Length: 150
Length: 98
Image (cartoon, rainbow over all chains, first blue to last red; front, side, top):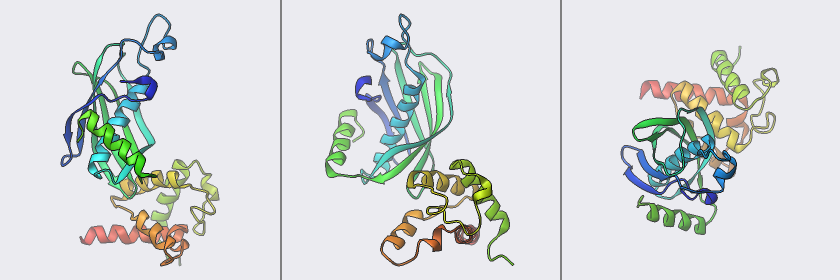
């Protein structure tokens, strides 16, 4: 994770375009300014960032599904639950699983696990929009290559 | 007699009211979802998701927008509530015969 860059995904471990699921690795950094305030002397990964990790995993799934013709944009989160505390240095697995696809949106189930134990879950909805520029599409491809999606 | 299904209308109006935080009493069969109810494009994606889920259909909203933008249809044919409800029922009927 590069929290200050809002990059929650380090590596795509199991892209499954046909099955429309994805599993990603998220390595929580040992140190980050995010932990300065959350919480002083008792650093924990904020629950909102756990949700973001599931949304980003689902977003990578969408990029693969649409072969980079569309970009994902978070439009909704339902039934979000944070069930465990995540400390600096933890290695998380973020999973996205397609549950519904419609005109201009995708709905996914997101799961976040730590050493086999689920620490967060949410129903994620992503708008699927045309890329506003070729340069942004190129950036998405670059990130996809760096993380092993393609 | 109304030219749309009242039960479908009620369901769709309930969904729009809840998803878009609109007073249910302000929604009528003549309401234009965009012009009158002020549902913006991102909100409409959420409305579409909820309607698709409820009725087990896939509303071709992007195709509708394309038809409107390219002058092949008028927006009210899709986005005035009574017409939207009729199109939803058509999609439900198509699904049943597919």
